[in-house]
Image (cartoon, rainbow, N blue to C red; front, side, top):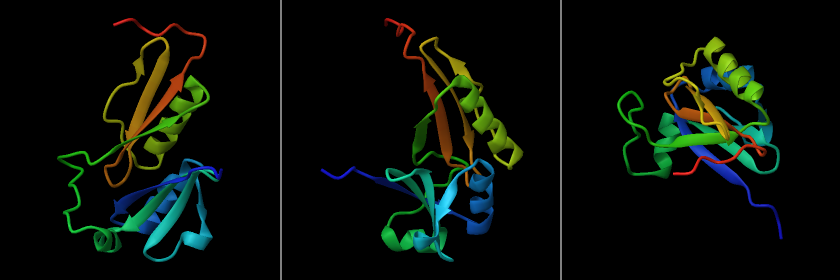
Length: 138
């Protein structure tokens, strides 16, 4: 059976600025699926991609309005990291590239997370799950 892939589609206001932002975080783009309207960001080769679509092109896929990320959240993207240090490093890179951190880091013992808001207001959560820690009982 072939590996499943996910292509998350996100509207962006300025494709070049969005590409520069994510490139600063270390992500690459697949030129085969990148043009003036869209950029295929490779999050995990062969499995996870984010399609950054210019808003006018994004609108051709839906009759619904694009969420105003200043006042609402259309999706919360969460990526796993290999360590707490990787979480902090990616958040620092995002802030240096013009992103913001809408919340403080969260340390739950078994899981450490922090996140950033990209240039278009999309929320990206980054988490490290400690395989040796006990999960909190509720």
